[in-house]
Each structure stands twice: as structure tokens, then as C-alpha cells.
Length: 131
Image 1 (cartoon, rainbow, N blue to C red):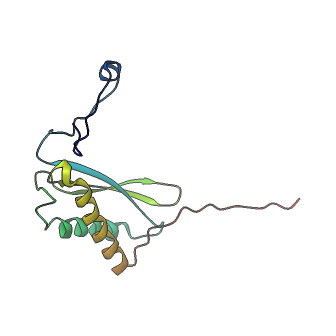
Image 2: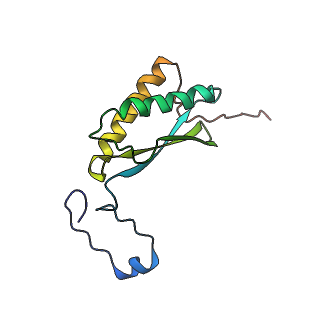
């Protein structure tokens, strides 16, 4: 049974061959991993501080969040169009995961706007060579 009360059948071939994660009742909380990209040239310390602040602000809603695992921020990669950070935080349960993500994303957006931190659109540089 899923969190949405849908019955799910898993074939034996998948059980023996694949990794299966049980979200139905693994623990009371659920660790959420989310990737957030910022523009090249952003102040990395300011971005990191802002992401922590966004999570702390959102986590005041104890119906959505658990303090079982401390929130964290990692600078993960130099991507094509952005510097990618991964944030991790703890939703109170699998059933409120989307609400927790929404709360954090709204706080990230608010704080990034206040501090002029840009979330870039994908960009490509095209060079035309005349022959």
C-alpha cells in the first residue's frame, strides 16, 4: 500500500534484481534530498548560509518537519548552467514530504530574492565561424 492508499504489486523478478525502498513505514521521518542550482559567480558562502536559513525558517512548522536528522548543505558540482548544491532535511513523515519540500522551496525563493541570488536558466554558448 502506498502513502496514497494505492495497492502496489512488485514482481519477484524485481524483488531479487532491483533495489526497493519501502516508504510505507520505514521510520516516522523521511530524509529529503533536493538539488538547487545557482548562477556562476554567486558567493558560495552566502548561498550556503541562505540555504541553511531557508531550512531553519521552514522547519519552524513542526507538523511538517522532524529534527531527527540535522539539515545540511553540500556544494555538489559545477554543472552546465549552474553551481549545484544539495540540501537535506527531515520531513516528519512520508505523507507530508511534498508539504515540507514546498515550505523549504518557498523560503529558498524568498531569501534568494532578498539577497539577489540568481537561479539560472539553462544556457548554451554558440560560436559561429565564418569560412
